[in-house]
Structure formats: structure tokens, C-alpha cells
Image 1: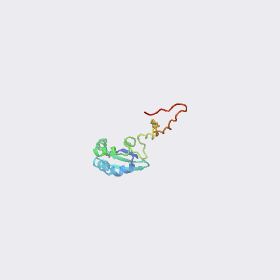
Image 2: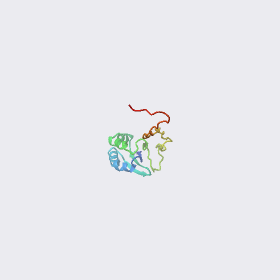
Image 3: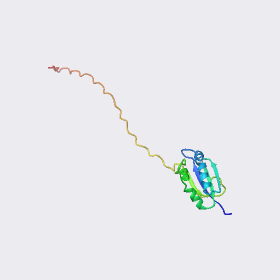
Image 4: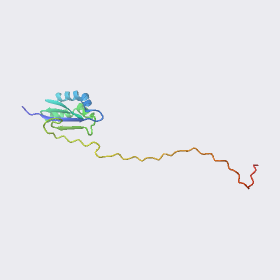
Length: 145
């Protein structure tokens, strides 16, 4: 009997939960895996994400599965496809064997938002009426013609 090789698809929470992603795409992924030679599979639910571990006998079976449009669409639809998706050889999640999965980057990566310039608010005021000009004493008044 030939040995099997495991591959893992780890999905972390993002805008939506990874469990919601699993509920939406899990059956399609498993159907694609089984029809392309998967011998075993296992879902692992962990805090902040899920892991789908799939075992194939041949690397070519994994490659064929991974290239399927349904698999590509499912991976593109993960809650955080940039920082919350890991695809790697080996078992992941809560498996006892060590895996080669990359460590997630810390949230925020030490970056801070640049403060935006605040424009000064110009307030309009109503013109105040000027008091009537009083004639200066000792000068003759002009007579309107």
C-alpha cells in the first residue's frame, strides 16, 4: 500500500467568520477532492478559523484538485484572502505532527494612520450697523442741494 500525503487549507476569520466560509464552500471542496482522488479528509475547527486537511496518494492528484475552478473560487472567497489564507503541504490545525505553515503576521504590523490635515473653519459674521455720524460741534452742516 502506498503512503498518502496530506495538504492543508487553513482559513482564518476576516470580515466574515471562517465557519461561514466553510458552510458555504465546504461541500463543494470535499466533492472536488473526492472526485479527484482524495483518500481522507478532515475539518479542524479552531479559535479564529478552520483547517481542511486532505490526503492524496499522488502529488499530481493534489495539483489537479488545486487547479480546479471551484477550488480557486473558494479560496478567492475566503474572509481574508490576503492575510487569512494558508495552503501548505502537511497537516495543520490541531494535528500532532509539526507543519510547515507560515506564522500569521501580527495584526496592524506596527503601522499607524497618518493624521489628515485639518482645515480651519471660516465663520461668517453679520455686519453690525454703524451708529449715525454725529456732526462735529463748531462746524457748519452741509445743506443738501
